[in-house]
Length: 182
Image (cartoon, rainbow, N blue to C red):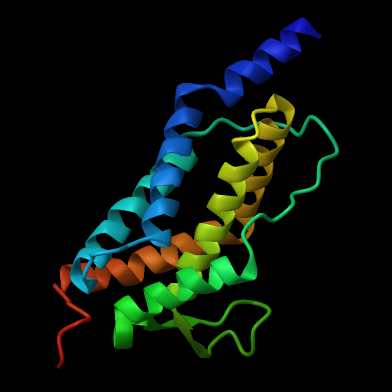
C-alpha cells in the first residue's frame, strides 16, 4: 500500500507532469484571454502553445486508473463558446479549413469544411477540464484525470490538436495576417 501510494505521488508530481500542467495552463490562459493580440501574433503564439502541449503530453508516462471516478466536465458551454468566438473572430476568413471526412462521416473520399476555432476550443476544453480536476490536489483523482486525458488524447483530441496545428502552421509559414483586407 505504501509503495503504491509512493508510486502514485511520484507520478502525479513528476517533472514531466509538472511541465505538462504548466504548458496546459499557459495554453488555456492564452485561449481564454488573447487580449491585445492581433491575428498574426495569435497564429504564431497558438503554434507555440499547441506544439508545446503536444510535446509535453507525449512525454507523460502511462498510468492506470486508481478509483472508479467519472470525468466531470468543468468547462461550461458558454466558456467553450467564448473561446470559439474569440478565435473565430481573430482568424476571420482563415478560420475555415478543409479536411477529409472520417470513418463515421459521409463518404470517406469527401472533403469536409471545418473550423480551426472548433478544434482549438475542443482541445481547450479537454485541457481546462483536466487542469481543474488536477488542481484539486487529490492524488488518486489527479492520476485518473491524467489517465482519462491520455485516453481521450488517443481517441480524439490529439487529432484535433494536430489538425489545428497543421492549419495554423500553413498560415504561419505564409505570413498570413487575418486582420488585413485582401
